[in-house]
Amino acid sequence: GMERGGMERGGMERGGMGRRALDGSGNDNNDDRDSSGNDNNNEEDGNNNPISLQLVGGEEWLANPVLPEDVVNESVPGNMRRAEHFLSLLSRLVSFFRDKLADARVISTVAPPLFLAELQAKMLVDGKSLRFCYDRLSSLLKTLQVVNTDEFTPIQLLADFATLLGTYAKGFAVITEPYDERMVGVPDPVIQLSCLDASLAMRPVFGKFQSVVITSGTLSPLRLYPRILDFNPVAIQSFEMTLPRNCICPVVLTRGSDQMPLSTKFDERENPNVIHNYGMLLVELAAAIPDGIICFFVSYRYLDFIVTRWHASGILEKVLGHKLVFIETQDVVETTLALDSFRRACDSGRGAVFLSVARGKVAEGIDFDRHYGRAVVMFGIPYQYTLSRVLRARLEFLREKFQIKENDYLTFDAVRQAAQCVGRVIRSKSDYGMMIFADKRYQRHDKRDKLPGWITRHLQEAHMNLSTDMLMMVVQKFMRSMAQPYDAGQIGRSLLSAEAVAALEDV
Image (cartoon, rainbow, N blue to C red; front, side):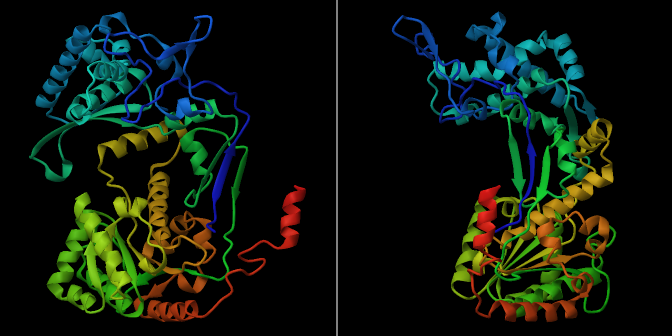
């Protein structure tokens, strides 16, 4: 029932990406050896000719899509085939990275070739050897019949880092940060290998399959994706939703009840009027909307800040007078328990509010269908942390290679994330819910036009500049209309008519 934006890419030659497969534990079994050190990955036919075991239907590529074909098919260098030689190489890698972290004093961003040149000069390790670290470590762990691979996670991460570093000369950046920029002066050195080019992940897909269809409910704007993924689509299409009734009500809240503008811009987010108006908005929504309400904030830091202010001013207590309140944290276990308690509160009829964060666990993979989500509030526009070195490096890469402007990408990414959040409440044709964009900036065309079409088609002109009191009138009217009986099988709206089916058969 969701509108799907889609792009299709055709006319590609079929090419073999890889012959690597992962076993159930996630280890590469292409170089599997038994305890005697003999290859056991091949069988023989009746004439004693070796038969290579390969998966079919593209599964051999799907097992591991990150390495190019030449790396997959190339033999492991002789200087690391013996276990002692490979362990010596790993030891030198560990020493090199330990020294780099200890000597980190300034923030730096370098291309992989420069980083490799320094590694080769100091430790006599060449890039070709690094490309096979992942394969060689997996083979060694299997030879030793290691069952609990969790103990070797750190060295596996190092091997993954080295493999990607030696494989890709472009599209990556090695970023060294001696401290977190939000906690200057506290030593916390980190070396990151950041992928700047998303097309690297898609290129093997286009090389392997003749036709590729990319679909999603948040592919908006459609024209930007081919540029980021570096391909030429043969067809781009956006489909309308088929719903038996207008069960989506998106609105843009620009002002509080006191007519003060609402925004989470950096210079306004700590404004007492903004904090108070956001709090009173939640109080009134909790009183008017049944069952579950989901709220998304731009960051964990802002969520902690605003909840603390609401608690001090008594707003949180007013919300608790109508519904229970649960909060997402960065701890996975705590968040899971909070989600379970939230669902039980909705099931019991008590109702609940869940305070979450855009780009968090809840925003990415948790559905709030049926009575678990009758309204979702997006407090602000979830821009990425613009001082992040990883983000700055990617913006520079996109500007140089694809001529994508910095502001265009940041806005596209933020609005896409907002659409991802509000879409949590509509999971079927029988669902209904309010979508409240609580920030005056959503009123602007450069923000609103980047929302998916299935949202903007339901966004009425009268709902693009609301204050809190006007919003509550819209909420009450919408909830009353959703309480009325309706025909879920209306021909021509939620179901295809006989003529429409016949027309499809003729195509």
